[in-house]
Image (tube, rainbow, N blue to C red; front, side, top):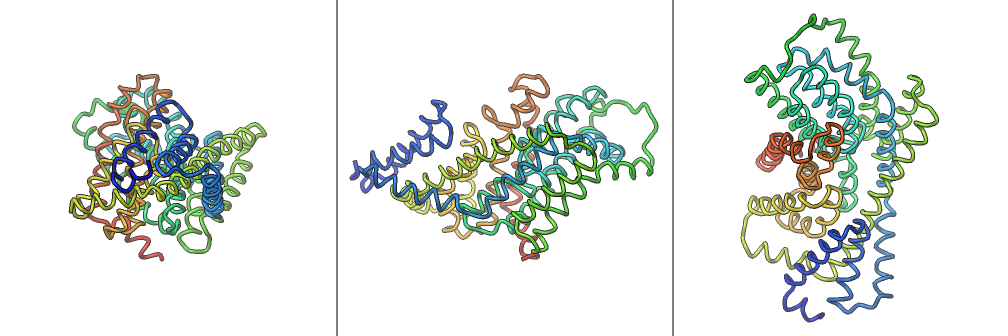
Length: 442
């Protein structure tokens, strides 16, 4: 069937994608499905011998895995696991409470601010949603806040774990696209804060229009002394953020070195707070190992898939097709955005990123877009996948926390899905939202 590539390359691309979704639909692990589709494509369409495929894949796997920047992933994940299993996140909620009291919507904003701050020391969307959600969902419900606005805002704000640095997806994108991870981290900060601002503005407007969403105030207002006390409760997180990001943005530390500093600081803080028990240490380390193995196995398999697609000329042929359509830069971004939204209905964010880059990145570079900018656009589309059924991970987390059916959680999250999509549109129209800060720092 090797003649098929030269005569009908787009048909080959469609068949490869069909095989991929077939394997994924069978419930095969993502890394195994990506590897199997690579082998199947090379054997079926190029008649390539298995021993040659093995030699190609060995070299590809080594080059993909032998990257120092990947060392940051397990360290950042372990930081998030430690915070998740101690009361540092609960202190964050209690510290934010007096600061949001004067804003329309009051404690609803703890979802937004809490996820924003936690995202700056975590790097995982699911960890951010689970950590903040296990505190705020029950606390807001007990105090009479509207449950659906609470769940929806948490679904949207939890996705900030991927955009606000440090971000696991940004690290993986930086490795695959061969761009500076430090610049990616800087590029993600302002779009992340923009999305958080849109969420809070929506909550404030909605609660101003419908005050019944918020319980009537029964106690005295918080004082400035309460707010100072709140800063003390938030101090662990407020120490970790500059410890991690300050070294990266100042150029004094690489992402991996900053991750090590952050982990050291997290261990020290949990020891000082008498939260680091042997069980917490072992459980957090085990959780970090599981998440890291999942992420890196998918990353290596993605390298294999990228190599196979190169042999099959799929990216080149799709690139030629899109160029022939003469869509223009905005048309290309629209097509790619729709493509990612469709993938998000069936796949989680990390898999979308590693599976699609061999196809989309060459198109973006050929169209003249900055790969740093595209990395942030990709992260936003991956975040959208976190809140779209049927496989939106954040929706499943909130389903478990709230006890509500997944479809009702998805409906509650829909306004925040639209706000996040609006962030992507603003990023396309005003690319300097992402590029200004890295241009200033580097």
